[in-house]
Image (cartoon, rainbow, N blue to C red; front, side):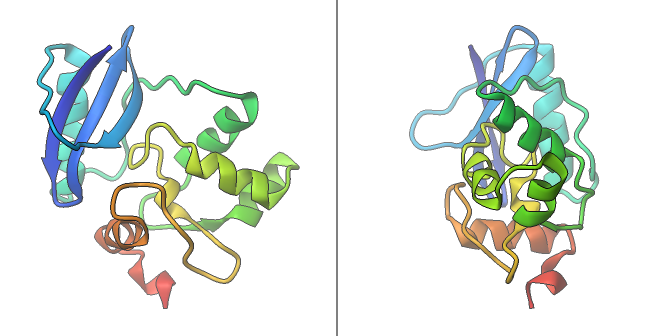
Length: 152
């Protein structure tokens, strides 16, 4: 698995690629990674453009491992437009599964930011975030996308 560390306003993001697809994104702690590869080059360019406010839709090849439910929830999250939010219940209704299962899947999203789990809210508003920095990072991502008005 190849990895690349990318500094952003949201912290250092470490993106991982395997067999031509992005498989993970996590916040970097410790050593920096700078593996070579076209997919990692594209991921870095797109994450930097997102960070700079020039990109609203990622077009990277992704491979979501895990259960069919996790894959389905990630597909629904990927369809949420930049600057919009939906609730766990909205996704649950579409997939005919409990909202709690959607919440668990969001927490296990292997490619946060690119698969925008930060755009998923609770029925009563802001909820937790599994990324580094927790809910503060979620708020920062939503503000960056102009969705902060939805937090009030």
